[in-house]
Image (cartoon, rainbow, N blue to C red):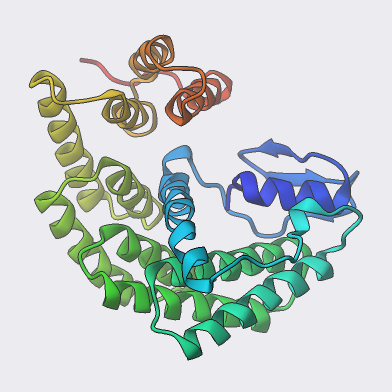
Length: 296
């Protein structure tokens, strides 16, 4: 998995060295002390759903803290120094125990379940990078799947939760259930468009090599975004997703770069969209073999 900002923080705090991220091969940290194992290549669009999930957690954490009637005094690993991987495991396992105890005593809420999912996700990442215990890794993944099952039961109309579940089932190798989720997600997105989640669906289809369905979903999202742009309803966020679609799946790198530059020129430097546009433009400029292939 191409690591996000939280995973980079974990590696940097454990090793004292900021990892150099290289898309094709994974990552190497701490002068070869720690090498990420079996981290598959994942293109930019494939991490969009995870970014949105993190944003939802931030938006819901206030409600959760209010329910708890206070916050924990425990310092998170990212705020400490000289910690080892086992320390991170202990921290996240402690957070999981606290959250599961809370769920035994209270009705479950999205905020609590999302925080629980992030702690399990952190354990999965640490296990993949620093340890070699397949049984524990599968246990964490199964628990994470269970959390998303609960989230879907609570909010069956949220395509993002189903998208996260589909990725987890794909990692597990349960393609029959993945296919069921993909069918449901596609129907939901065609009825209530969400370009960010749709890009994550497209990346999953690409990973699964479902070429016919992949082409259909790319064409649908392209048509939807172009209609929104032509009608004047598209904002810069829609334009960003359009740039990702062009840069990743339509072979139109130069057009994607032009859209991203327009976003950068228009957005405040303090906005998250500005940062996303800058990062993706840098990614396109630094990627190899990303020449335009479109003929129209």
